[in-house]
Image (cartoon, rainbow, N blue to C red):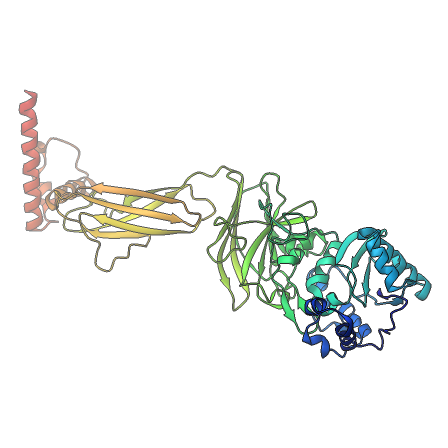
Length: 532
């Protein structure tokens, strides 16, 4: 309803926006002019009616108008292509309207204006307002504020004058019409105060969402002053405008860890997922995960990022990541609960192709602190000792336990008592060193840094065994394995079999074995003396 008072001489089909600007500049005070008129008004030759037609109806379908906005914000499920603009003259002068605004004022005044506009629609056009979902009452002269809701004189409505069409576009109309579709102001989980005013102290704290318009990432628009930002996934769902077939959903009855690729939330013409749902923890609703990019309605957001929301009553709540941030970049994590728990990790963001890869995880079990254990990686030969041998390479690996959701981590190896092999990295899955002689104490350590801030460590201290001992161990192992010698006292060994076995070893190796065997025998003799 494009309304004017009975003593307003401006015919909306004839008077241009630039004409209004000239009139207001001529009679308005400087504060009003500075607050409401910018140079674009003086060059705008659209008639008032033409302006409303292109902004509210399919006439302006190729501009960032109301029809385009709600088509995008509802995945095409909320159809406002039937919007109509009806110019009307109310049986009320501007002075009489001002008197009513002062007394009774407020919503009672606005309800009265809605009633008058609806009566004019019926009387001047023969149309019942109930043929439409709701009514927007907009005066072509300055009026009082901008409001929207589900009950203005018995039905959904929006109340704003022409200034909000020229200066604010879908930035303000998207917000107030969102109220008409039943949405409250968007908020931040756990935050009870706001830097913006105009609502509950906790309102207007989600700048990526139109329902936080007082503090939102809105972009300039050539046709209507401002536009956007878009609407978050939970507000779209509450408005019955979320295509659920394009939302990946995880069950709350079983554990899962899934990696998916997300397209931007409002890009329904691009194949793939437009969002994801994971179970809410405690009293929370399910969490909806979305990806937003610096395009179209979101042209003013800082950068492509992933965002998580929950919903309560009529309000969406943006969820903070583990660093206290409201949006997630590559490597960032959102996690709620300690068992059951839900988790979102952003693995990567491809700004060129407008995709985000995320890992979604849920578990019914309590979170257990991860642990790590270093193992010496024994060579393939089964007869090589289970300990590092002096003068040789030693390779170590680590084993993780209690790692949830395939969490990402970074590795840092270190060693004391010797040096890593030349060219050995200390950030890989294994770590190789040069083993020193037995008297030297060696400690290999590993530290694991998880993406949620958890840090775990392990150490592997050892003294090497010398080559002679290693050779003796290998000799006896080979004898048992290849020739199946039964365990008998050494003095009962079959000498012919020993000669055959010895042929597998070099003279130097046999010398080392002899030395080590002699030491073993000396030890046995000493033990026998002690026993006696």
